[in-house]
Length: 433
Image: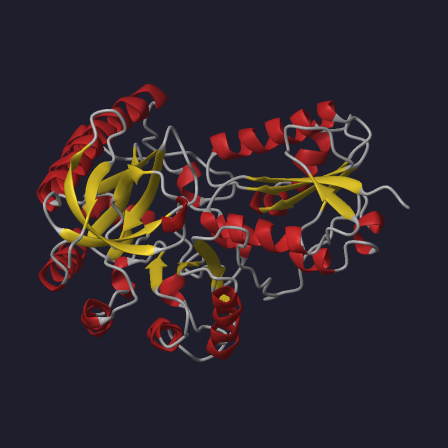
């Protein structure tokens, strides 16, 4: 009997990458491959990379070098945004990795037995224009990440994603509904809708994101949908009113702000003002008072003065979202912002990020406190950690309860009772209703 090849997968970056890696992994059947941890020696490593910041690129290079040391003779296949943007840099920095291949067209993973052996370091496999790699994650009893859209047409001055991912494009609604049905048959109850710019869905099929939500809502077996990041200018009143009435689309929003200064938003080439952003958050709160609202914010963008930063901090304090995703500005090659004047010193970026991170901690704690003493629905996960199991409410509050395997993968009615001083998770009792 032929010995199975050992294969390991490394995912860096976003939920979209996670869904793509999971799909890639399914192309390597168990009959021919043994999947192992990326911390162990393998015959093949597949590294799905990210290039959103300089730190992300550094982690990609570290991952390549790490797996090459684990097995110097291994086949190392690098794909994803960093591979798309910097293939020659990867090759130059990793000359000692004899089995290095840079694979940009993920669709080639559909024929792993033949194509991957033909990919050489000097023969980069580029995707066809406007190609779409369909993807969803599997292997988790609780939720699946479903890729519905790729690419972006916005070209913000700080962002390399359009360079790495191309123009906005998507799968047809009908195909995505079929995929959601496949996910449901695996016993998974929650889908996270992912993409680069999901609100821009429909550019390649003449449909729109609202069409998709309404169609997915009718898929039998899926009880919950969460939205990944969606631009504030693409959240319409009609859509939010429908979500508020929906039994399946959860009151959980991740909305990028990036700056609370209109001057900086204009320099970023964002497509909204702080006033529109505040209006969208107000609309959500009016329709869904307990909704979780997470906000992306960038500190230290070129030209951001101390006064601009204070505008952002004060704006966020008044807005009072549930959580902040804070990113110090990272100058990316081939972007307009990298050439802007008035670049902010690195130490100043770090200090400003620390201020907003502290604010985020306070806002998150406040949100949890506001949700003590209510009835909710929790989808419990399978892991047993110290005799406890965890899950998430509809509005993305992490709760814990004594481990009970019968609850795994189940949606349970609970009553929130307090916050654990040890874990910071919400404690609950079983609802009598």
